[in-house]
Amino acid sequence: MTVIDIPGSKSVTARALFLAAAAEGTTTLLRPLRSDDTEGFAEGLKSLGYAVEQEADRWRVQGRPAGPATTDADVYCRDGATTARFLPTLVAAAASGTYRFDASAQMRRRPLAPLTRALTALGVDLRHGGAEGHHPLTVRAAGIEGGDLTLDAGESSQYLTALLMLAPLTAKGLRIEVTELVSAPYVEITLAMMRDFGVEVLREGNTFTVPPGGYRATAYAVEPDASTASYFFAAAALTGREVTVPGLGIGALQGDLRFVDVLRGMGAEVGVGADATTVRSTGRLRGITVNMRDISDTMPTLAAIAPYADGPVRIEDVANTRVKECDRLEACAENLRAMGITVHTGPDWIEIHPGTPKPTEIATRGDHRIVMSFAVAGLRTPGLTYDDPGCVRKTFPRFHEVFADLAHDLEGR
Image (cartoon, rainbow, N blue to C red; front, side):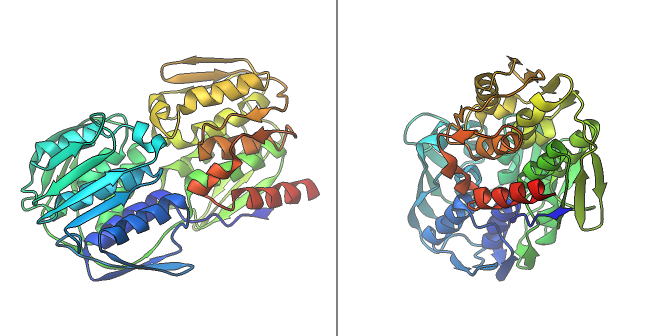
């Protein structure tokens, strides 16, 4: 059995930084993820005047419930979607200030419109510097009264998360009616973390009611990243081996741990314990049809191992993967075809047929998840290379080193 220590969750770290900044007192984050995205979020908070102290395995954030310490700031969000969506929302509740946000070319292409429309509906003076619904943008903050909102979160659950976390900072709170919702487990992460910081959200179906009030600082332990763990679980299922990831077990916040259920459906043995999850290969991968709407960040992981199954693998209801760091659905199809695999796609689905993949250079499109997913395929198809291997720094800077150690360990067994 191989035990893999997975770095902290990007999703949890980003939410924890927002909540810590908005809380009364000093919050200590234990084992936060250190990556380009989370470092960018922390730098964004510092640009706004929040005090953030970063040590190896703990970060301290001095909260400011009234808003940023500065009333004028420029914030560069890098490639981070959580940074680019959460930080403008955080400052929108400030009593006063002008805050300018911009991001990388990749992030500028990604949509913001449902969120910026919602903020505008709440009375926020928000102006785009280029295309509507995209970065760059300027927020002229003057506080938010609150009230009722209708939101379409069918493109990204981050829009809803940003507004939920904002709600206690408004004068009257928010009541949000959601018409469409994707990646619902990520919203459950948000609700659980808000609770840990002292705010209870009432949910009735797809209507969320958040009272006004304040967050309380706390010591918060960041659990390992379940999306990152998917590559190591898939490696076990693909190579006839066994991998255990500590820190992810019964009660884990992240819905992407459900990827192990997909592997179970393909024939792997899965054990989820109190504080660890183990995937063990049975020597076979079956074809499967699976809806991955709620765990779509792991879609590329499944796509990359699909050719090695004994029947077609069809992944459905993943239209939102087309508006991630790249069009992930098309990126997977393009690379699998370059490997000689038969692939069919539609607006929200991909079907991959069994085959014998040949080595090629993976067109990563600058997307960390494309690199890490096809690294798993490389365990069975030696010779795969990447046009931008370094883009893994977004969420897992040491990925190639850790995965090489895994490959060596698996070969030795």
